[in-house]
Image (tube, rainbow, N blue to C red; front, side, top):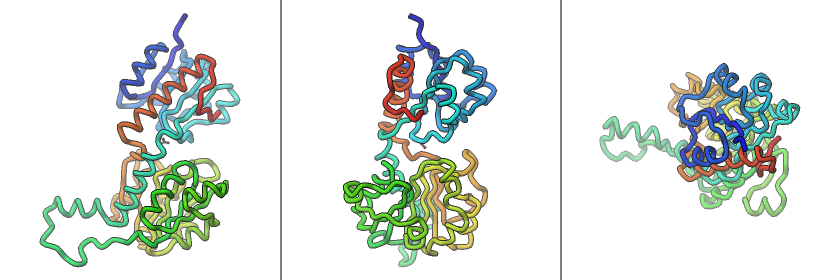
Length: 320
Ligand code: GLV
């Protein structure tokens, strides 16, 4: 039997490539640099399966360039890079990789919360520059977490995992999400529902864990950011465009909010130039799920979803 043709748009882990080669005629999967749009449209022409990443814009034009395409397996939990409506219209399946990255992303969120509240990167830069002259009572003063309120926006798997960790830090946890948790879920995560404005007005740390879609684009607008306390910290390890980055840079520069920890940006790979100049923001390069174990599980999940779909079986993580 002819193996189905699949395209992997950029570097995948070797274990997943070995698996894909067993079951498919594979192109790509090795280059660190991704494909340009023109290259993608050219290479996808004769493919039945596509393994994509969050940096690949898979829209109507790309899908229409691939008349034989049957499944897109995105190697990410987010799938805002794919036009889901168009995929449905064309009868192309789409899968993501939920569940396997929940704990790693919640850990990274806490790393960002702590790094921002305690100015860890700033203190590290200071030490490396040999500026340490001796202990001082007021050197790098940060903020306590215990007894403070954590407000979680987007209470799916990752939001709930972030909330569970907050119990160990003795924080009061509130959340906002279009879907109210069940009582059991609220109890397990120790979190109480609040309307968005009230969450923003009363939280000391606001952490974003929503998915990006038209209803969450610029959810944290200048107006919403202005509700936050002056001493508050904003953390975003979800998707950049949920926060109006220009408004955030302005609020941070004016010290209208105390600090921010960001793992994602509005126009990745660009980081807003104003953010780069500010000392009250911690900037990470979109590494929320980046542990060896988790990235391997993501790669294998995407590869298996792809092959299952091509075999005509139902992959677990269908989003379209
Ligand atoms: C990463 O951002 C993901 O969506 O998996």
